[in-house]
Image (cartoon, rainbow, N blue to C red; front, side, top):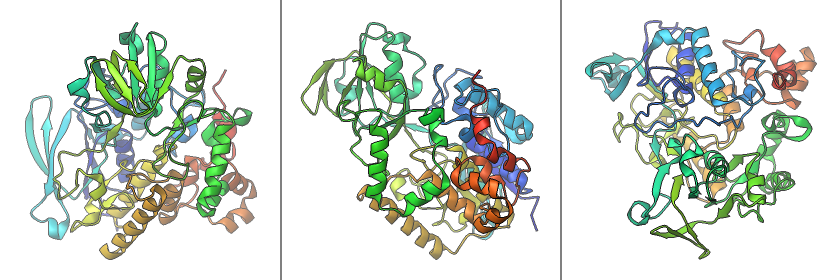
Length: 505
């Protein structure tokens, strides 16, 4: 029987937090969410331009890398009048619509910061936690006991600045992190070096050419460049089907690498552009960058690519190939790492290589691993994060409701060891806190009973079976069967291409 009195603390009201609240409500739990800002949606919402600690902001020109369909929530589609790829304002509005539709804001305490999360006196027996919070309106501190805590404050917590040796000490120009970028105006007539060729770095480099005198892009490990629009005008993320992705899991990695490199190489000569990834597609250290503009900027000489930096002296940057550039501004588009200062090192280590999470969710080394969970922490490496986070949230809520039990600690350790070893084989021995989006979300869905029977689907609904296995993999697939299925999921899954291309005119 579901214990409706079970109180769950949800930390953060961004995408991960909203999904966690929704999942808890579906399972009859009582979530109370603490959010330090005064609005939902986190970095995607444009309610308030004020910076808060290390929280990143999205720049005005940002367009999503994933199509509206795959970025969407599984039982609440974005408006069909919107284009296939939406901007940051639309995505922020979409999160507001989602929160309002399901009444999620009633569970949120805004302008409240988490000070600490520590085991309660009864933890060994009950698994409960003491959560100390600070009301940012009046600085009042309070402590409340919860039956469980879901850390849903995401991945973008602590800026990574360590890729450039002694930058602060030797560089004479200005430096700022990509998370603080708002537009190219400050680069007028300057020489700009963008470090990092991921999504943000590529966008900043391209946009900087509008005002800057010179733009250099340091692609330390290279990247694989992908377009948003693929063959026949289809959004790229809707080209991949379930059958093909399942085959990728069992085929030799060299075969998948070759096919992928042939695909991306048919559009851009990565070697000539000086941006070819050091790592093949199936290596989880590799980077994928969606950019329609960067290839043209490189081919036209407006963006000049550079290898890894050897040293910086004054305004002179020297690279490992001994080329030098005069630079006024360095933009560190080097990303973020998860950071939870309200948790002790014993509970969650700051070194992610030491973290031990069953299903990338539950810290199984704890005495009561089911009552502390992390939603939205595992990087996907490619693709939309929404489906992963939503399935993680549903998994946690099912465990907390008592409808699903975690395995023994020994079994969780075994599963983690296997997961880690598979990842290390992929990377050649280097640990990366990252997982394959499709295979991971399919494993979660299988555990939750959300994957339809192949033969039953084939016999009873061949039209849906065709689209399920040979059409795009979309969030609606995880609402077709099982608990909390959605009566419109079938229709949406079948007519997905009409929906995906709506709103362009």
